[in-house]
Length: 416
Ligand code: AMP
Image 1: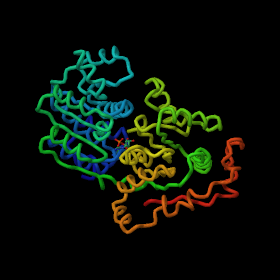
Image 2 (image 1 turned 90 degrees about the vertical axis):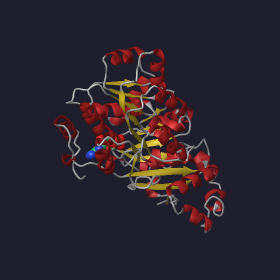
Image 3 (image 1 turned 90 degrees about the horizontal axis):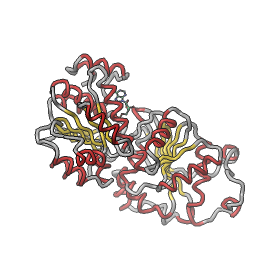
Image 4 (image 1 turned 180 degrees about the horizontal axis):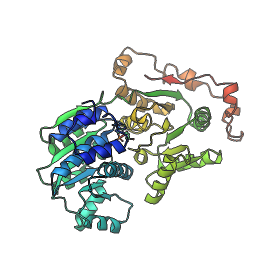
C-alpha cells in the first residue's frame, strides 16, 4: 500500500487524513492498516514517532463507523501519551461525529464522569484511572469491541500488569485487539498470548534498533563535569533539546541551574500537578523555551516534532528506555542527535545499551575490542582535570565563548 487512496476508507475519514497533512502512509501504517481493516488482531513492534497512532486510529474509525454500538478503548502508559493519542483520534474522527473521553489521573474525576455520561465511542486513558472508574461504577467496558494497547512494554515496566489483567476481566472476549510495543521482551509475548487471537505480526525495522536518522554519540565525563559539558553542548547546538535526568529532584535542580545560567529551561516530571505538566509541555511545543529537563516517565511518548537533540545527562535505568529517550528526536523522518554522558559508574548500564542497539556488540566484546571503561581508564578517567576547571568557586560556564576559539579535545564518539 503506497497511498491512502488504495484503501477503502469512508469519505469523511479520507477528508480528515487529508486535513492532517498525511499524504503517504508511513511504513507501520502501510503494514498495519490493511490487516486491521480486515478485522485482524495485530501485534506491532514500532518505535515512537513512526506514525503508529494513525496506524491504529484509522482502522479504529472505520470499525466504529461499521459497528453501530461499538466502543474503542485505548490504553497508554502515561497521561501525556493519552492526551496526544486522544488529540490525534479527535482529528481523525472530526467529520465522523464520534466523541471521546480522556480518562487520566491528575484530572478532575467529575469532568470525566460527565464526559462518560455522554456515551462516547472512544475511550483513551491510563490503566490506573480506568480502574478507578470501573471500581466506582462510572465506567462499563462491555461494549468495547476495539481495544488498543499502546506502548505495552512501558505499561509493564511501570508495573501496570496487574491493572491490565483487571481491565481485561471487564472486557468481553469478542473484540479486535491491536497491541503495540517499542520493544518485544518475553513478558510482552506472554501478555500478547492472553490478549490477542491469532495475531498478525507487523514490525518496523529491527525491534531494538533506534531510528536510523538519529546521530548517536557519547562522551566520557566525571559526574562533577556534567553540568559544564551540558552548557557547552547547549551553546554549541541550536534547536530544541530534551535533557534526561534520573530523578524528579535531579530534573528540578538541573532546570533551576540552567535557568540561573539564563538558559530557558523547564523541568517535566511526575510530581508536577497535571495542569503544570500540561503548561510545560505546551510551552515547549510552542517554543516558549528550548531546553526541557525530563524524567523518563514524563517524557515517554511525547511527540514534539522540533526536538533536535536528546541528552542523556544520566543514563536510563533500563536499556529499553534509551531507545524511548532518543526516539523523542528525529520525529516523522526529521533528523536528530542523541548525546550520552558516561561516568565510570555507568559501565554496566552502557554495555547493556550497546548490546541492545548494536547487534554486533557481543561479538566485539568477545573479540575484546579495547574497553574504554577499563583499558583506557587512564585516558578518560585517570587524569583529573586541573583544579581550576573543577573548582566550584570558579565562575560558571567556563566553556561559553571559549569553546569555539579553543575547542576541548573532542572525546565525542559515534556508536553507529
Ligand atoms: P506517532 O508515532 O503516532 O506519535 O506519530 C509521529 C508523528 O508522525 C506525528 O507528528 C504524526 O502527526 C506524524 N505522522 C503520522 N502519520 C503520518 C503520515 N502518514 N504522514 C506524515 N506524518 C505522519
